[in-house]
Amino acid sequence: MVHARHVIKFYSKFGMCSIILIHRCFCSKKVYSSRKNISEKTSLPQQSDFHNHIVRLCTTNNVKNAVTEVKKMLEIKSMMPTVVTCNIVLGALTRAKDYNSALGLHNLMVDSGLVPDIVTFNTILNCHCEHGQIESAFQVFMQIEKVGYKPSIVTFGIMVKGLCKVGKMQKAIEFFYQMLAKGHRPDLLICNILMDGLCKQGVGQLKPMMSIYGLMVKGGMCPDIVTFNTILNCYCKIGQIESAFQIFRQLEKMGHRPSVVTFGTIIKGLCKVGRMQDAMELFRQMPHRGLRPGVVIYNTLLDGLCKHGKGIEIVAVLQEMVEQGHSPDMFTYSTWLAWLCQEGKLKEALELMEAMLQKGMPPDVTMYNTVIDGFCKKRRIAEARMIFRHMLEKGQSPNAVTYSTFMDGLCKEDKVGEAMDLLYEMLGKGHNPSTVTYNILLDGLCKADNMQKAASLYEEMLRKGLVPDIATYTTLISGMCKDGSMREAERLFDQMIELGPSPDGITYTVLIAGYCKEGNVLAARKLFEEMMEKCLAPSLMTYSAIIGGMCNEGNFEEALNLFQEMLDKGIIPDDVLYGTLMNGLCKYGRTEEAEKLFNEMVERGHNFKNEMVYQNHNVKGMAGFS
Image (tube, rainbow, N blue to C red; front, side, top):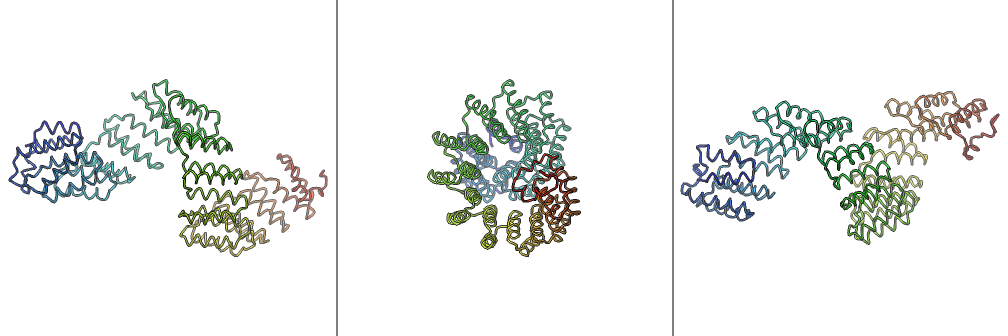
């Protein structure tokens, strides 16, 4: 028989299943090796010596040798190892994350006639869960009860953790409450795992998470700092920063000392909503509480400062980070580079990339994409092309985003031909263009009045199995309206309504403007009303288009009513809309109303200095204007 001291020694070192194992070995009348399907020839002293030998191998990192020897015994069946011995090897393999070997050994055990116990089942269950094989885990769980064992708290805990790991939170909650129904009292670890899984799911999971917390407190369990960090994280994720702050302030009153993770969580939440001053204040408190911020917290602050345009603070935090002995990592450089490009500091961005190369940290494809985008936005295409070539020279392969970014820059410079060449280069190198890539090119072709090529490219996009989005349809409808192809524009619009995606306010505005340009104000008005029925808010562009169409028809009563409706909704008219109305009124001899509009425009702060608008709208012909 196995010596108790060896089992206790091993399991005190290696795991939570020890109590169950020892109970089955020494408190039960059953002896694993005495089961009828185990060879009667087995000598207990020999079996004990073999067991002790396997324990020594597993505790001295010779697990492979242990597996080999156990397998040999199982195969020859001259001296069958006990389930306890096999469980020790299975546990060692699981801790080494060698799940395939553990599952293989378990199969050999079963084939050799060795009957698994609850520890075996729990270990195999854990293997499947850690491997992400949830369906297999379910099968093992059901098998446990079929062979006469009752799932233990360890069994339920393994299932809850496995389900949380793959995001099956509803099923995890079901197992949790099933565990309660079976009379098991969950421990703090299981509750924390479940709450963390719910938190990672984000919006909509706060209520079930707090229900678990309520059960913990009601059951007399003391939540630890991990529990509170999870609650903080959940509140921060859904933007309830004040609730997070309340928990944060209560921590010390409840006897908990905030950790680096606690501070990092709340700082991240504050950065997310732009409360940078509060984030910096908390950051400054950390040293006074004996906590040293790590690279992650510095990066979080830098990311927040960059996104909210705090240039001076960015440099100060970077300097402090280095002074505190932290080396900037790829995230630090990426954040810094993005801010430099956002601020138009492209020379500094290039210098930063060069510094990275000198430090042996070559910029990745995302960083190159950021810099190329920065140059394209400044319409410095030649330099963007230079960065593109430099990227290739450094052995960094462009991805679909690189090509799309460069294409966008070329299209904005009316270099649609070059952008199309880049598409074919991209395809030739095995990159798959996305819907966004095609949208960029379609926009460029439509603006270049090349509707034939745009239609051809759209068909190519469909052949590749890409799904058009709102931007695709709106771009094509706009191009067709501009080209005077209203029937084609209507066909695409109807296709959107029938198949999706549903047109948005911009799509409606584009088609309304097309109808007005064509002189079909009745169709434009009908579409405007349909837009309102669908609760899509008209924009300044929408009102400008339909008011312009009505002015062209001389329908000023309705045009002025719509103008007033627009003002009532808080939409501020621009110079062009005022000019459209004044021009129409003057054209039809209604100069007094035009003058009234002009005075109103001046009162609203419009100075009407745009000479082109001034001339085009016959302002010089208005009575009393000078």
